[in-house]
Image (cartoon, rainbow over the protein chains, first blue to last red):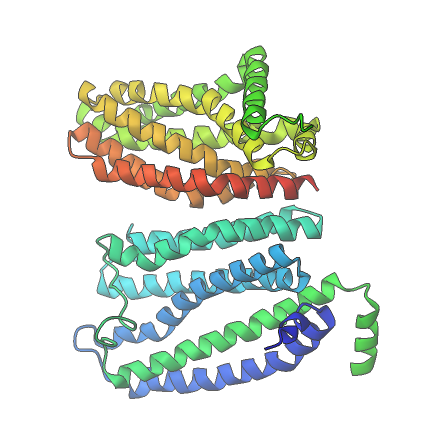
Length: 247
Length: 228
């Protein structure tokens, strides 16, 4: 199998066109899935025996927590590829992942707090899962702060890439914090031995919401990366031709 | 033919050079120790100095002070040598850049970390811990401060080229060293209570070994990028 298809993504014009073509599609898919998932989660899913209606926040909380870690992993992966093979587009992608990831992490924390208030009786508790998720947020903020404080773009790219790679150690800590420590937070319900721990009527909207959030992330990430490429390549001749062609 | 000294000899030379430099300017590396003692003293001032509560507070005061003092000390790690071009000479010397920077980090730990390690047991004794806690506390602080220096070197390298280094350095390093704080404070609390502390010490040791293996590589990459 040839690897040339992969290398094409390293070229800013190709990526710019690719992102411009696919981002609206991903956004559209995400909106459709979001509507289906919300209808399933808020209307057709049965009421939980223990938590009554409150549990329905799961349809926002779990996907955003999942996407927080996923976008961090994406960011670190893109940063590593950019650092090792010196592909500038990958640095643009990593830069685009950070604000989206920070927002998902914040959303995950906020929905978790709203869920915790009626079920645990407190907004916040110093629980390993919560603290480690909070540190993921700080990590995203640190990444963006480092990127912002170095003026030379190439150096900012590579310094923040090192930080992103080093920060990957946090991901397993967050993921397994509920297992390693006695946590108030419940362990994973979806992926566990013996299949998912919830009935299918509750499960399918969650899976749809997960897919919707993932497509949303892809769309936002591509759009942001596209703007990032625009900013970086603003003196490139291909860009002038491209803009003249599409205008 | 090849007259270049070995990586170890070069690292030892860097270590000696840094120690000589530090001996001629004792003010600089004594600052973090002074800061450490001062912050530790602030805790009982702010809290009701009742012996039982102070003893409970001792691990917290020790580790927060240690963390803040090592962050403060990190500012001195590469800054001078980056400014006068020594780091560039290191990079051009043909020696392993990682080994030379590890030697610098080791010297830095000897100058700023070791005094705090030795002061640590006194700090907890002053806060009312029993004398039998001293070996456990010493071991925990020793392992913890080594890890702090090694991980901190990455942050120091990354912020080398930035204008407002201090606050950014804390933002980058603190999330990374969170496990050191957790297990260090846990080991210290157990040592003071006279409980079994092997698991916390083992985890601290594991963190130390992990950072000794990987952090110097990341720190060297960070410094290299910052120098460009």
